[in-house]
Image (cartoon, rainbow, N blue to C red; front, side):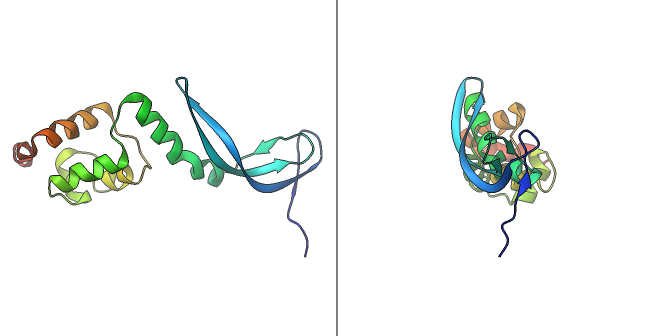
Length: 134
């Protein structure tokens, strides 16, 4: 069996696929994630593919939401269910389109501040959803 490797563009050593702890920082707050990438055995250079970046993007978005004071994906889901809305209906009534709440609730897209505020108000008074339906 042959090992799969790439050649490091910095030092010429072999690079192998691995997952290593990596720190993500946003506005002074830091979280450690397990980052998949090609890692060099000679100089510790790392090369990330698009798939590698996507693997840790939810952790970055969660950090950003925390720092910005936005609702978490789980909180969004709880509020939507409290309003008795499907994801598609929530996107239609509150804005964003049919897949917006799927993306919010799976940590794929960060809420805008106005959407965050709207959901927070509706969480406090779910009866007001009827005003938005008309």
